[in-house]
Length: 612
Image 1: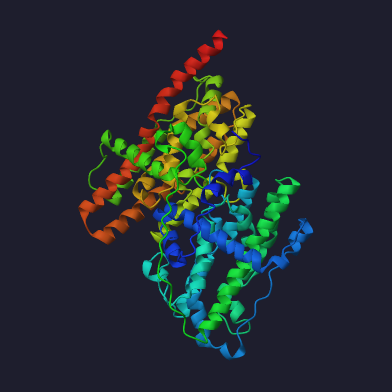
Image 2: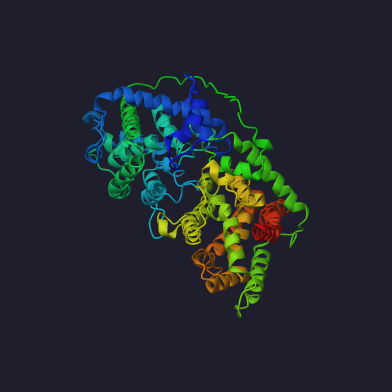
């Protein structure tokens, strides 16, 4: 199998591009696609249409702005890349009524920004400099860090102050509302679609982001000297201007990964993404101007696109070890997701068969007591190390090697938690904050996967990058080492379908970071001179009083409050509690084969070494 230079190597994307290169349908209705992309459970099936749609509009941008394309790349030319000015509306149209209409029309654009970045720091690449930079940029652009007011919330306030009803973007009625001009929907659709292809279209995403940081909103373009509510626009300008240098640095780092010939091709693609943003903004301005002159033309009838791509790999017959590669790279092999869903469901059903509920009828008090009892039992069971550990240093090093497929994707089960923003924004914020902590909040040194990679390096354990086929072929791993990682990855791609189970699994994972096992692990690793940072950080960040364990419990309680409010049915509440507990116990059930295999294979490995 061909070796790739890095996780963003364009050659990695070629099988995907070849499979979907002819997926565009000239009759495709962007409103239908916008609706599908706002339904996370439908995104897999919409990927061919989304890819074709983006490529077609990119061709338009390339054609329209070809005179402005810069042939040869250099840092100076990158810094000099600037968007073109867009004309304001004529003076006769600069009034309060039209400004209100512009604010109402452009909500879909504002509320999907910067959606295209949220998949660029997923688990397959989160240790790379580029992914770390992109996560930092995303957190800054959205202002999701603690203590900051999110730009989206400021925009919500703007809509409320202007008397504009908050749009429900994921509703069928909104996407097919003829009162919202098609170019606005197309702009928002592109922003959503780009997020599905974080590696396939990364050059275009980088250019798109640079243009986004340079251009004002359509509202400011149309009404430059008109009196606008200042708080949102002022804050947005401050935030975006500060990210111009980071995104430029990120583009430079990305291009530096490639040889000169490939670099030039990627430089052109970055510019295509850059001018794509400009084109979309220009089209929206022109169409909005037209709507103020004449009645909008009738919308085309919806033509749905059903793509049936020939599946080249029989994913259902793959082992968990083999599935690991495809699930890590699911953005390149989306057909694997159907098998992932089936496999996750099977594991969950089997988990429930052998594990009775700790309490039958749910209440917050019952949950508090149950979690509190587990935590107290774990902490009280801890005994400080006295003398030499029973487990040898060699055994620990071998064990560390075996958990690499899991810890190198630490946090993966929550990597798509932002898909929950339309389901329950509070739960979404909690789960995403946990994921952001797991991968360092835009700081590589705090990234758990990176910390574990440094541990591997310190022990001279050299494993291939997780996104490569060589990783699953690494002879040092036992097969069962891939069971839990594949389960967590599978569940992560269906955060809405498996939300109760995901909440339960998250609770189990966060609790597992506390108590006697991790505390004893730290003692024994320190005794043997093994860096215990990865264990220390989990004990700290998962703490019961204020850390991830508390957040995990809060997310469950918010979910159950929502179920109770929506149904008012005690039986329904208990049914959802069974699903949550099924997810909770699945961590232990799915990991059982690995736990039993470890001592057996270590013994076999040791005996084998002795006979050589």
